[in-house]
Amino acid sequence: MSMSADVPTPPPELAGKLRPLPQLIFSSRWLQLPLYLGLIVAQCVYVFLFLKELVHLVGGAMRFTEQEIMLVVLGLIDVVMISNLLIMVIVGGYETFVSRLELERHPDQPEWLSHVNASVLKIKLAMAIIGISSIHLLRTFIYAGQLGQSGSQYTETGVMWQAIIHFLFVISAIGIAYVEKISQDSYVKPHH
Image (cartoon, rainbow, N blue to C red; front, side):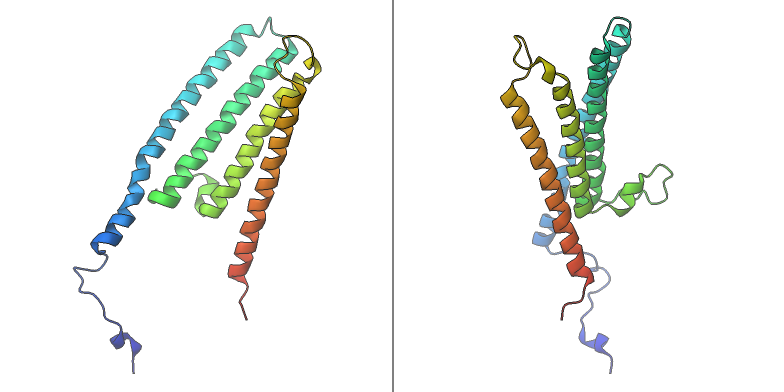
């Protein structure tokens, strides 16, 4: 005796259709589309900022000190890392939470997108934030020799808090990765 006869199957014209409330809830994911479009605009602003800083670097290359060049380059790296973070959020978030991009056979598909999900996205975002924080901390440490002098951009307390916040980002990322590992292990191992 087949069990399939006991399971009612909807008529073909109703297959794939949802009741009104589930349809409304499911469709609400499209409310995120303007947010992702706004992040694309923010990405354009970062491209402009990068080009502005690059022109500044090239224009001052002959008169800047090595330290000034290093600071401008760190600023450029910072812009690129933030831009990478935006791309991860835009592409990964849209693919995970709104709709599929269907890039499986596209030659330019980023490698990380083939296995993106909310867990992978959280870890990648945490690592990107740590990278950005590291650039800011490095920039601060370059100025550390000026602490206590008049006109210094940073105070000892400010440097201390920046280091503490960076440390907390690192601890948070480790915590997120650990929780994700535990979660994955619990799905893989059979429970008795």
